[in-house]
Length: 111
Image (cartoon, rainbow, N blue to C red; front, side, top):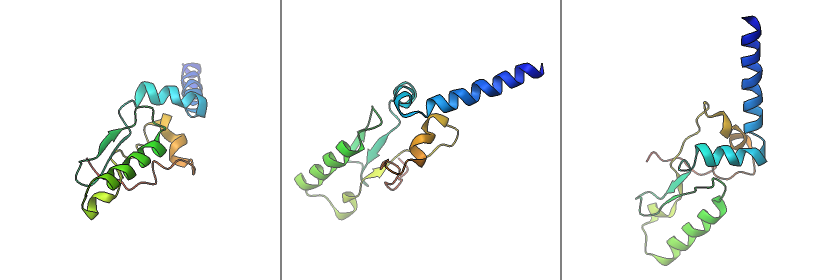
């Protein structure tokens, strides 16, 4: 019985570690978070989902073009992330602590 618990703990630890290795984390992001990474402006006129979970630069560029091409109110010139940090989602831990990852530096807005 004790060996069973030890095995479960070891397998859980291995799963957490493997899911946070950058090359393997994309598989977890795609499988579990395909529609998780959503971005919007204040009014919701600009709303986009990053299906791959790693295209924040492209989304920021699209938002800049959106702001340039349309007459928007000043409140709508800020890009928000509409997803929160969920500590239970262990496969995202690598992005929470990655200083090069800009997606969590955006202000959060509840959708």
